[in-house]
Length: 440
Image (cartoon, rainbow, N blue to C red):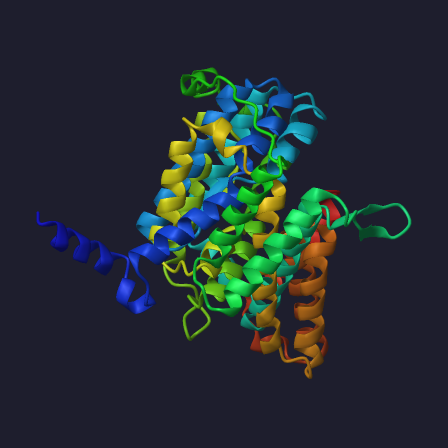
């Protein structure tokens, strides 16, 4: 098949013309997403290895599942959403399930597998799609804005610009620290590039900050041996019988609930930012998005890692111009390559990636201007969503406050019948989360 014909077919499949994008833009966007997500290659194994799972095996499984999930998402759903083992869920897996409850990691992997199968069943039954459809479109901008504040806060914390304080919760960090100064340099550089409408501003800013950090000896890299075949120590070691025998309902429920609503929040935020939500406020190909997410979780449990979910860092790629699945596929291919160069990928420090997260957050908050702040029924739930996502460090919790308050105000003002009954079911589910779950 001639190269041009193959290229044209791929461009048609990914709808390049409709999204007004190019190969260069999509690939650079995928690289940007990967750079902002690369920390998971080392953070996830560091957390899960405390369960007794072999570190090298988890590292390979993390890269493999991120690659599989991202490539699948890009290929079948055509969205610039990258996937990887979820932060928060890996901590729940380690500290609550394995260390807290004394459940073997093999059995915990079995619970993750079961949650993935339930995800697939809910997707095929259309339940997950209906839950997303029940979220009032008036809250879409507040979810995106809240997540923007969330990832900006993460960037400010990772860079050291903001640090913990016993007196005021958080406070200004040490402005004389070289890493903080490098992060500030990155913020200024990316901001200037964005002002000049440079599409690769995020990637250029990260790489330039990294280069300056290397020049001033602020990047620590310790070469280490790494064997990708170590994945044999965790692959297919899940204990399904153990998960079925024990009272795993609570564990599976947490894996289901947190991933479901974190994923919904991320999905709404990224598609809102990318302009991919349809005029009727629906998200096209939602079933394919959820199929990719659920399948990645099942594969992740088989490989030896916790629940795989969509990453909000995908918004960095969207800010760089990514609009199609090529962005996610590029990220996935880079995760696949990272299996063999994991020590090198780990050399990218927080001060280099933090500026991208901070300024992506700024771009996402801009959508809050579309909220009808003059109408209390919309303004109050929107504000609660916007503020509680970063302050509770949980997308699911922020979404909970927004949905519950919106439903209550609709009923209290006599407008309850104007909303779909799924909205109230969703509000009850969120209420049950607060009543039944103490954390997560």
